[in-house]
Image 1 (cartoon, rainbow, N blue to C red):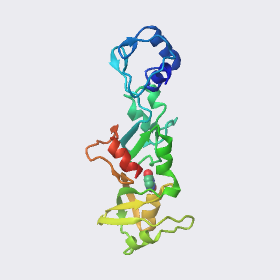
Image 2 (cartoon, rainbow, N blue to C red):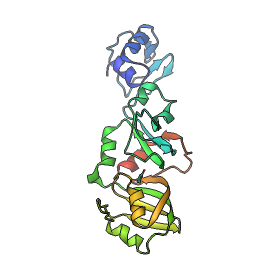
Image 3 (cartoon, rainbow, N blue to C red):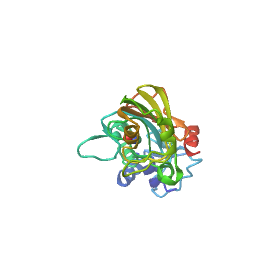
Image 4 (spheres, rainbow, N blue to C red):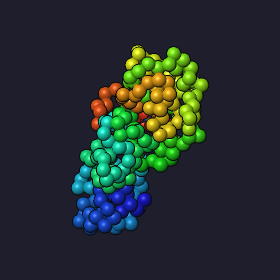
Amino acid sequence: MRLDKYLTSCFIGTRSEVKKIIKSKKITVNNKIILQEGFNVDELNDIVKYDNKVLIYQKYYYYVLNKPSNYVTSTDDPLNKTIMELFNDLPTLLIKELFPVGRLDKDTEGMIIVTNDGSLSHYLTSPNQKIEKTYYVEYDGILVSNAIELASNGIKTQNESFLPATLSIINEHSCYLTIKEGKYHQVKKMIHEMGGILTYLKRIKINNLELPLDLEIGKYRHLTNEEIEILKK
Ligand code: URA
């Protein structure tokens, strides 16, 4: 890969900034100063340094965020705080490449994957894949006595129908609900159809990967390679 492309891919600057950095003799490859922008870097074996610090080249970035309520899951919103603001310690150029996988409502908390990998995002959100998502739910009211059966048969409302889902009751005001699609306000609507009024919603699992227990609300961390594999399975 060309050195200038390698450096922009490491998010150290824009194309024109990177050109200046190369000219200022701050880039070494295998400890030799390189001044040609088109120098061919072997991204697996060469050691590229900027100001004597090793650069790590990564094509894809994968993060898990524990979303707080009051943030929207878009990259840009003129009225609301976006979850991307919670990543503001990353390089600005990297933040611009990242996007959330799927959506959570503004008042929903919990697990959301943020990445620049379009194919993983497509896999996890494609309706054909029927990827399971598990939510912890708190509600007011009383769920109908056959709620578990209703959910597992697939709830139908006047205008919509939902695929079979797994409801597991924790106590009279909380439950887990696992669904295989991601329709607008789906969990809220399903709980409503079963007789409850949702008061709190948190996503705790996507596919086979659980929200890390030690990840504080509003915080994110890199997914490990093992976690990425679990997500893809
Ligand atoms: N279902 C909802 O109602 N809201 C969410 O944020 C996710 C699923």
